[in-house]
Image 1 (tube, rainbow, N blue to C red):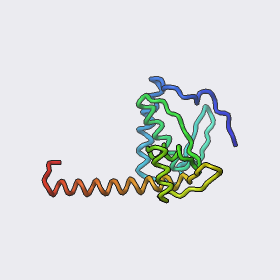
Image 2: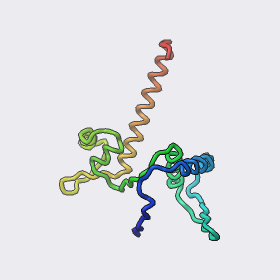
Image 3: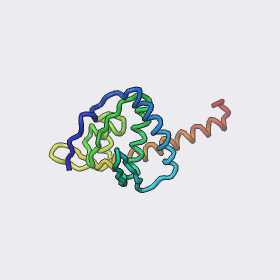
Image 4: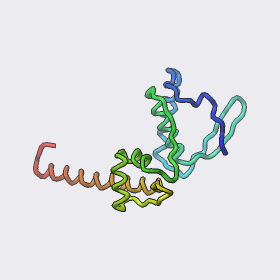
Length: 155
């Protein structure tokens, strides 16, 4: 189902009033992140009508991030990531060059399939690689920090 988005969803900097509202909302909602749930129940009250509905936990977390950014006076634009991504999209997710992603594909570190002349990867495979890579880097940094402590290097 495709919805026509209202013009108010264009990317614009929040007004001072919106910054204050976003800050207050962020502070109230962020407290609920301490108790993760599969879904959240939200009640929308408008004039004299009230509607309650469920949203996924991931959408609730993103709502809180949007409010945090608006509270800082930043504009927010959502960019959907498809189930399958191309090289440039994977490079953007990983924060690396297209050539680096090509190397990851050719070395078998991220599985892919060919569609014509384009390589396509499951977004989840890219995210899994990123998670593994981040964990490996964190482990190495922890080992280096422990070694620096043992050698009394002052940091």
